[in-house]
Image 1 (cartoon, one colour):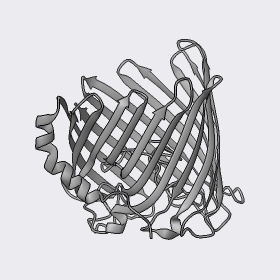
Image 2 (cartoon, helix red, strand yellow):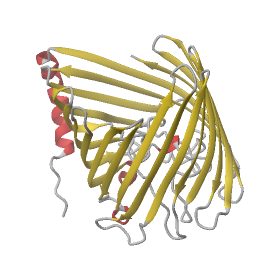
Image 3 (cartoon, helix red, strand yellow):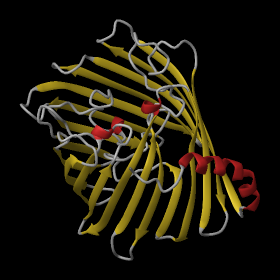
Length: 397
């Protein structure tokens, strides 16, 4: 039986009840407010109907600073649908439409207490957003209306001219389906998991080693252990010709009550150059598969990887090889990006399909931004063709 170092629900109720007292005792406080309105359209050839969703998200938070070393943060989140629900949110019963995974939800998004005696050390306990590295294994999934947070103990320390160490004990994860989801096993997973991450500057780059022991009590067969190493380096002039390169390798094996078949490898090779404000990137990402199991990353910010059409949120049993090229550039308050992907099976090399992704964002006023984004996946045998369009406006205080 797994041991839980604290009861998350009791902790969060206590934080809420203590908020008025804490605000009065705090030396200073800061209010945060985020609001986002988004239209999403999905044309999926697997469905006779197209999906259209107009959703809104509002987050309100308050950061209390009690002393230079002690602080606390509480954040509430509300997401909702506007207009007709012509999409499958996973909880509204509209299963004849393609999925737009933004369910109605009201939840305590974050509630944590932090002790930071110096700039190099921090200990945080409670419900919190955790991002490790490039979020390939652990991230906040900020793209969806309901982001991903963890009930966790998180410790970080940076040594002078030495490595930065991070450790987290994960007790529960609030997934993107929302804490209010009627399927409790879908909205949240109980965990008894450990995460260890160490990074250090070596030469022109940063070397990172990581280990994840994911004991997923809600879905025991999915439990696994990751061991990995990543080296990311860059050089060149900031305003002239620059370059960057990344190499990464990881192994995945069964852990706790995980199935014996949870055995695969991960590899990444990526390189890029920047010229006169233009950034070009190309790479190959491989998630291994043997025909019965593909390398999985269930706690990642998955939308950021393997195409914005989200065709590979779960790695196929034959694995995945993603060969991609990309370009992005900024012009003042404007940012543009274009990416191309070619997807193949790791085992056997059969074609899955290819995809184009484009986006254009505009910071049109202080604290305001707008985004238009498009993804088109053309299947060569894996899944159905799909096109997705997003238009959104966001405010952050």
